[in-house]
Amino acid sequence: MRIGYLECFSGVSGDMLLGALVGAGVPFAVLTEAADALNVGAHLELRKVTRSGISGTKIDVLTADGHAADHTHDHEHGRAHAHNHEHTHKQTHAHEPHRSLSTILGIIAAAPLSNVVKQRATRAFQLLGEAEAAIHSVPLEQVHFHEVGAVDTIVDIVCTAAGCAALGADRWLASPLNVGSGTVQCAHGLLPVPAPATLALLGDAPVYSAGPAMERVTPTGAAILRMLDVAYAPLPAMHITASGYGAGGRDTPGQPNLVRLLVGEDDAQEAAEEAIAIIETVIDDSSPQLLAYVSELLLEAGAWDVYRVAVQMKKGRAGVQLTVLCRPDLVPTLRALIFRETTTIGLHWHIEHKAALAREFIDAQTPWGPVRIKIARWATGEVANAAPEYEDCRALARRHSVPLKQVMQAAMRAYTSGHPRKEVRE
Image 1 (cartoon, helix red, strand yellow):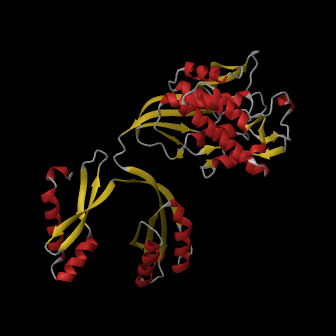
Image 2 (image 1 turned 90 degrees about the vertical axis):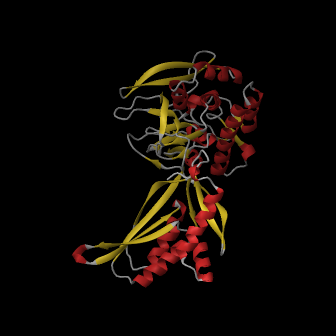
Image 3 (image 1 turned 135 degrees about the vertical axis):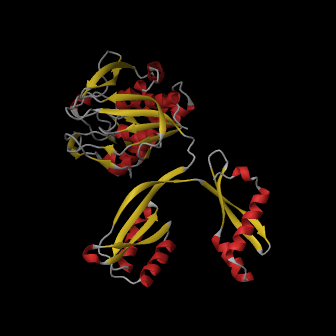
């Protein structure tokens, strides 16, 4: 699987993504051809710049008269924001036409571009329009874009879609986003950073603020992340084959104004990865019966696993560390359950990553009845492990008054007799 990983330590915007794509090996001609296909009187210009001592690629959108169509604003990456048509943005953009969503989508549909590029770009503008409609409490068809509908943002989104298609990543991932801080000036006055449209588009993406106060994630950048169905995760295990640095408009001392794109191949994802929450607390004044009961409740509420470990606490007191493994979205529910049902007055939790092999069940026939065999497989389909289900074996052992170990051994013999032993990796 080919992975594109975005390190957004200084935010993300349309021009930064274009520069990162070229830096990672996408031919500049792919982007210029996409810009020409739009027939909006704009072309791209590439230059190498330095941001806090690191070389990056800066791509500008120029109009037919040679003037910069993008990033002429006095704040960070270039404002990409949509508003109801009754508003204006800044005097520097009073000459820019207002475009409805349908007009912009018509421009994209009419361009001689691949279906993948058109679909992605259309989705990005649809998301922008929906965000603005919700923020301003107007129907989607009444949202008119000025700055975000200007030439620079149309080119940024469409050319990024074309560049991503050329890169051929099967999956897009990103680090947590440095959104910046402070305020940004727009038609409605000073807005907090991240701007309302950006915040709406980011949804539940992990964010933080670091460095000088400024806007670091633009609405255009946020829409492109949504367009690519970016998942947020630590850098996965992969073989890096290319990298690129895309530059923003300013050189910010001590904080390289860049986004880094890493492109690589994973190791066939032998184990599927997902986030896992780990909740822990230490209790020294609860009975074993109470903790056993709480463990049952936690499992019934959806915990993947619950275990207890004896620990020695301060002043020589014996205690029990209660650990719960669960999906991250279950943390509030299980946390509340622990506070309600135990005597603890504090706990902590953190998010880790879980890798699990693909699993399936087959029935193995024993002299006393069927037993399910749980089989784990590598991505290649080869069996990694196989084991009889304890509860099935336990039920048969009790029902027929035979030793549990005898039932388990018979189940494995039945399984291996129908499956060559060489499939099982020790």
